[in-house]
Image 1 (cartoon, rainbow, N blue to C red):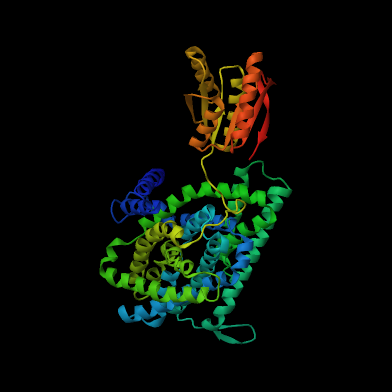
Image 2: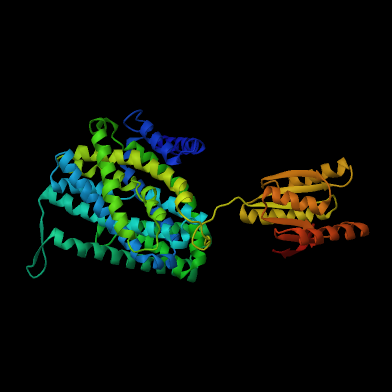
Length: 553
């Protein structure tokens, strides 16, 4: 078992990175690894892991839905509320019915079995859509109109609807259950109860998320039961997973929607906690996505694809290009979206993966006629739409959406932080290096150590290199020497490397150097558009260290 886990994580990661370097989505590489390691080809993955695949996928989906909730923007949702709600029902419903009709024609299914296939294929994949939309938000694409938020919310609602219809159809096809008797002797059909069940699952899911968010803020912020972000994340992830488990045991609310709502309400109740959890769940997703997509690839039944390949592709195309596009048109009718933004829904809201992997094999296991064909088409939808969706979202967003201002309180903005330490050969260089090391450790940044050569003193420069190596031993850095006017070279190198801050000293170690270095720091402060931290000499922890003055443009 441990050997299989190592294979999944290491090979999944590196093949995913190879795919990324080839300009393909990493999930393509991960799915291929699953196919190669799975029972279809090499049978390398231990059977115990394959048996636990559903539970592992559930954990991965919990992580991505928590990320989605922590990235939602209440103001943008209010702005696009009606569109988000319509996106949650109309595209999925239209695609489901069109696929059902196509299956009746091409596969000779009855209408109920066709609807069952439609529910499986029509569900959208949070594993593809959520990271794609969150990345668009971090870059600003479509944020002015709240397009990523509307797609995120609509995707979650549509999955609630289709999973509920799927469970009702499965009960009808396998057991012949068509009616439900309520207290008082009132008999209703499952179809008549469906709207009430959908509304109940959504309302109770939101309430469960609200209560969970309240509990988390009480425990993690007000009562201080945790001491660091790692413990915060452990508790939050456990509560989120508990929601999913409870929803499976008591299916009166949507567990996935409750998880997403938990993240959303945490933002409203305590934004600093949301920021900490957002960064931590980003880290969890690095591992979770490898497990999710490798196991997804391992579950694809390659041997049954051949017989339904062309028919399956035709059904997928008709469902998307006819059913789903008609639903998108109805969803955005009367909104402020232009035709380009509406067209973006085709690449941005079509990916299938997670739900299809989770429920695609259930009809076959339940003995439904045509179950093997349903499983094959579900697998085909994953192989075709997941890579296309992961590639198309970042590719077409810059062409179809407008770029707006990024709200850093709603998304984790990952960027490389580079600091510049401008040092001379005076003792104050130690103070500057200590300060830049402190700042770099706080933000996990990199450092450019710059020395502007004023005289040929190889021994002093070698000593400065040694001090840098000692004081920045646990930090990525590069030592750069240039010749020229000191203040001009500092500003020029800072711009060249795209640094976030300049750290430099104010005084040298002799009287004439006090004047010289002081004038240099003043000149940099006047010329630089980058924030400058100026270090003054003082005694600090056994080293000569300093205070700081900071100026932002």
